[in-house]
Length: 515
Image (cartoon, rainbow, N blue to C red; front, top):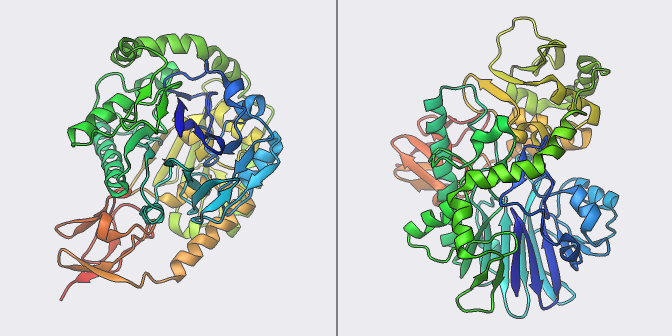
């Protein structure tokens, strides 16, 4: 088996039973904000696109690139499709022209013309755009696990299948926190450093649990070529930057005694039959060293090549012909009436301001108590978003049902909040269709109705075994400091004296002192 790096989470896996192409992303994503790093646009995508199988892990646009799929990827390829609760990914791929699908039951191994395949699908409303997934493959010689962005609470489903030769894992940030928050610089740096440390620690837990022979850090980092987002690039040695590059992470891993990490650039080829798991890169060692040592110059050249296409797209984002508030009111009102669990979780108003110095601002409240949208009128709110008017107009023009997978991941906005993070707000903004909203409401209803029955003892406290957030096993991911428990899976915290969640609303923990 051979693995060719194609940038970000994309690889071409050559097996004894055909080639598998994963998550082929090339074009700028999220309002032209994200680009693959390093640049992968000069690869021979026509040749790459002749793959026998296609796997798209989820609908986030740094994994699902419809333009690249439509232009280059063989439409006769068999799609290895995750078992998601909605049919959106399959529908999107069919619209592009794919017609052959294999959809295994999540967690079950299937034989696809001799190739052993298992897809583990995560289906919480907080997983990707209503779903994320990992791909496990085995041929006669090797086994590979491509986990990309997925964060399973444990890896037991893969461990039961035997040793893994190659492990592809996300290591870099894939969110807007804390950069977009209107906070003092020092507070942002502290939050960024904590997040960076947490995402690194999470990978180490996975790596040590799986025990794979070789590890390839993938699914990141993005780079930002637009001048207004330039500061998000990891080019200043800032340990609070949540988008560290591959060499930074590999050095960190090595410092902790793990020498199995390998660099995978666009065009790098890893031979899994080699006992040393050697990697042949498309450029010399000296060129690699220069790329990462002088990354700012590399990105400036990259921007000169690729930014003209973004600048051309920006001109089409403004839609002065749209009555934005009227459209949003008609769109959101019926959804708010159905959003019982989400509305209870938000329990207040969310202010949204779309700014334009020339045409005027659009300023409105989404009231989750009254279940209505109305113009802002000097009301006190705990949550606020600001963006440009043209971005909001484009969302309305496209009837974009997932603002997380467009505006928020673009980082082209700012946010304020009073109190803890509230996941219900972001679930609403990614569920702006009846299908998605009904699924999310049903999921929350199921979680609220079910008792987490099993109890364990940790550091003198009796607590429910499964994290109330995404059901991680707290015997593995739970850490207690005094009377505060932290789940290291996502960094959520609970006060054990009363079980109150200190991170978000509506996720209390059953806890008491052990007798």
